[in-house]
Image (cartoon, rainbow, N blue to C red):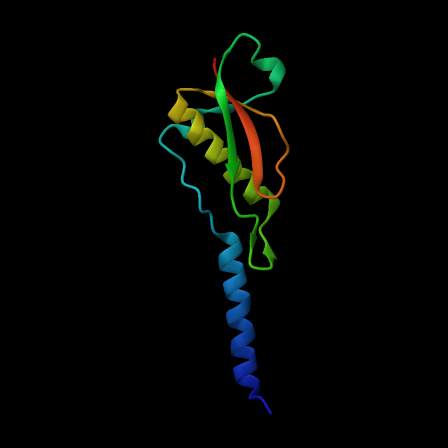
Length: 109
């Protein structure tokens, strides 16, 4: 028969591991990345299109799904980083976030 303290310890360890793993942010923004704006297509009519980027992050860790808000935030941060690297300052999402991936168009406005 299992020791109740050992079972409780294992459960506590599992809960802490899941909490820490799903709370992690793995994407670091580049300097000035937060200044890259996310806009609608109608707002970039007079801007120069620089290119596109596809952002991808893990939406699951093992069997545990990461929160959609966190995943979408990291996808946006990656796209902002790409815009900075291409000399852009504006993004337009060209797809929905799905399976930890999303496409963006990069513009200079």
